[in-house]
Length: 296
Image 1 (spheres, rainbow, N blue to C red):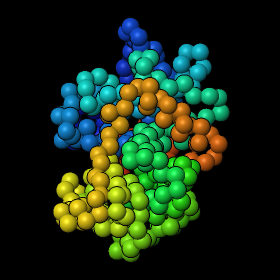
Image 2 (image 1 turned 180 degrees about the vertical axis):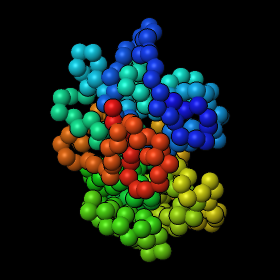
Image 3 (image 1 turned 30 degrees about the horizontal axis):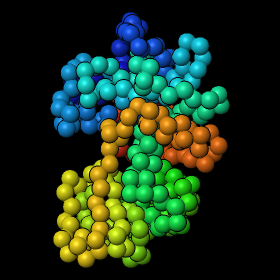
Image 4 (image 1 turned 45 degrees about the vertical axis):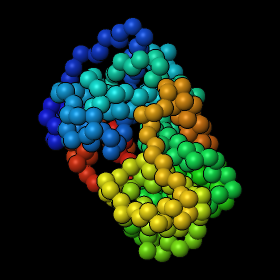
């Protein structure tokens, strides 16, 4: 899939297979998710600046090496010049490969990928969730769904999930959370995982226990939030920012390995849909719930 014009979907093209440079290997791609970061970069309005076009989008994917080894991999597509994961064959630096054991559900791991890494990193940014009450905002999204399950797997005492739709709240409850609308937030919590910011983040701060932390990793509900000084100071609260871009390749690989193990054991999943790459153009512009994963 080749993006030739920012703000428009990529189009299917046939190209010669890439030639790997020093330290890179070829990966036969099995699946590549369409993520919010892919859409943001392709819009030409991201904080990385407009990408050089044409390019192949896709900041992550799963596939096989020539010897059959299954791998997850990352790319800087859209953030730096170069092609990404939305091609049948890609050249990937060896540092950006994470080997996966046989039996790993590759399409599910593609759907989880960096969203689950972000959820896990946010949960640990302010210390272990073990024994704590965790509030997850945006619980209907991929990050939110992963955060619910990873918090419970990490020993959280309780997980409260906030989501806009009744369907998303029902799904969050099926994952083990107590699901509520934002207006019903009244129980004290120790840690907030916040992929939305805006008014929901301000509401979450008001139920944080003294010394509690809110970890922000996105702005789906707004780039700014109506936070008041008195709330912050009266509870000695912490607001932390989290980004996967700060991870070293080794740390990211360790987290992907942990996530893949949970997925393989049936302990971690997210709503997702496998879509043939030939249907990318329609899938690109859809705004329905769940992660869309292109398959090759």
